[in-house]
Image (tube, rainbow, N blue to C red; front, side, top):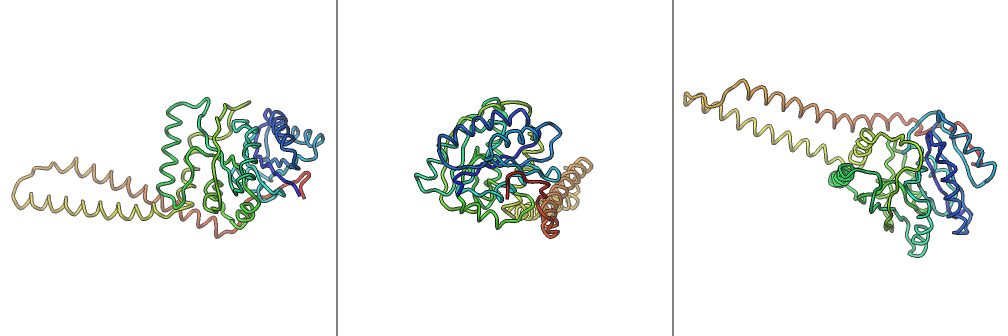
Length: 311
């Protein structure tokens, strides 16, 4: 039986494939256990697929699945996990920001301590501004506040978990797959390991740091809690109550015969505020309804065009 399966989502990463394989294989050879490296490739416009095929010709433990179109990193990762054969599964990006050398320490920790999950926590982030680091920490706090589960701060998808976790993840069929949330939801024995996150080795990130981060945050909140809907109801009730108080205040002014509050500015502000609040509430509700719509269609989460070295 294969001991370790490495799942690597890739898209337009031709420059990083060879250095990633060189460093990862060196680590896996040190562990001295049978392994497989599964590249999960969204169709790329560069030479990524050919580079991987060239490496497969040298090392049959390297495997490849190519999707029919671009499904995105989260779904690519889930597809790789569902096609693993190892006793343990490692999820790691190919850009070498997550060091492959840490896999050996993660494997030792999960086996020695009889754990089910070891997730990597970033204690430092090279090449990132102070503002981005603060936004990231704040975003995790928001997700954990709204969500019904606790997602460790400063973590990504970089982790190792046992086949027990893989089997549980296969039971999920969500279209918006948020791996770190799903693993936290599954539970079992989990622990962390600290590391310093490096700068990207080659090329530029294909991940939009603004819309991408926002989408991940929304997935973390909407996918694991209905609390935002409850808070919107509370906020709506509160504003309705304040509106009643304000109306009563205008009524008293009219009875007394004074006009202490100018009307036009207040009216414009209130209408603008309520309109923005309604749009926000509709948008939040739309996120939930949209996910319901995606789920009831029961379309496949991904479509594989071809597999190389995979059963």
